[in-house]
Image: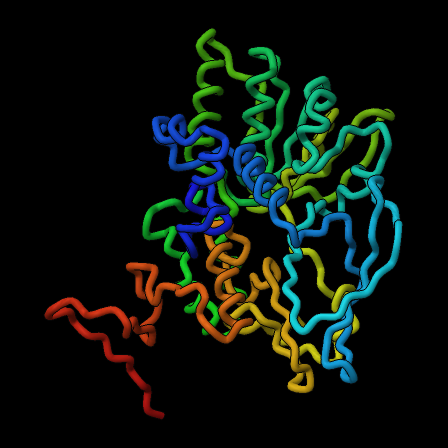
Length: 408
C-alpha cells in the first residue's frame, strides 16, 4: 500500500503518528528515502500500526464488547463488556457509559458454506488464507494443493506455492468464481473512486443504484495486482524452458458446489463451471481458501438499539454522510461506524487510504467544529451531472454543464 495511506497523513501530515515519523524513530528514514518505494510491505505496515498502538495511552486490548443499549434516564449509551485474560477467557465483566460511540468493527474471514465442514474437520489441511502462514509447511507438504479464490490473496498464495514446488511436479490447482484472473483497476483516474469526492457522490445515489455499483465494481478492489499476475506468468514460463508444461491448472469461472472427505485424508471438491454449465470432481490433498472477508455482523452487538435504528429497504442500518447510524430522534447520542458502511459509502469504505479522512470526518462531526480541515475537492473526475465543486474556481472559459430536468 502507499506509505501516505497511513493512519494520519492524509488528514494531518504534521502528526507525530505518521509512517515517516515511525521510520525516523527507527533510524530508517534515509534507507527508505533511497529505496524510492512508494508502496510498503504488509509486514512493515503491520509493524508501524503496532508502534502506534503501543504508544497510545487510551487503548484497551483484551476487552470484548457484548452489548450496546441506550439509557433514556441517563441520556447515555450503556456498553457491556467482558475483560479477557491472556488466554482469551472471560476474566471480569464491566459496563461503561458514554455519550457517543465509534464502532470499528473490522471484517472476519469468509468460508463458503460448502467448505465449512472441511475447515472444522481435524487432520484435513483446509485453511483460510488468513491462517496460511501458520499452516504453510503442512500445506506445502501435501501432494496436491488447490487454491480457491481469484483475488489478490489467492494470487499471492498460488505464486508462493508455485515457487516452492519442484519443476514439473507442481501439482497445483487455482480456481475462482470470477470470469478471469483479472488485473486490479489501478489507473490514476480509476483510483479516484477511492476519494472523498466519490464517497460523497456514492452516498447520494438511490439505494438500488448503490447496490448494483457495489457488485459491478469488483475489479476496483477484488482483482489482482498486475505485478503479481506478471510474476505468476513469468514463473510458469520459466518452468517451460526445459520443454514441458508445469503441472499447474488455472481455471477461472468455477464455483465449489459441495465438498467432502474421501479415503480418510483426501478432499473431493464438486465443481461447476459458471459459463459452460459443466460439472466435475477434483480430488486434492490440501485446500487454501482465499475466499475473502465479510463485514462483521452488527446485529448481535446492536440488538439493544434495534428499536431506535432506522433501516433501508434491505433491512440494513441507514448511515449518514458522516458515518453515523441514523437513529430515532429520542436518542441524543451518536453511534458512528467504520467498515460497516459498504452499502452506503461504496468501495472506499474498507480502504486504508481513506482511514484518516474517515476519522477526521467523525471527529469534526463529534465536536461540531473543524479540528481537522478537510479538502473540498479531491478528484479531477466529476462523478455526476448534479455534482459541483463550488469552492474550486472554474478554469477560464471552462464549459458549464446544466442538469436537464425532464418535463412530464
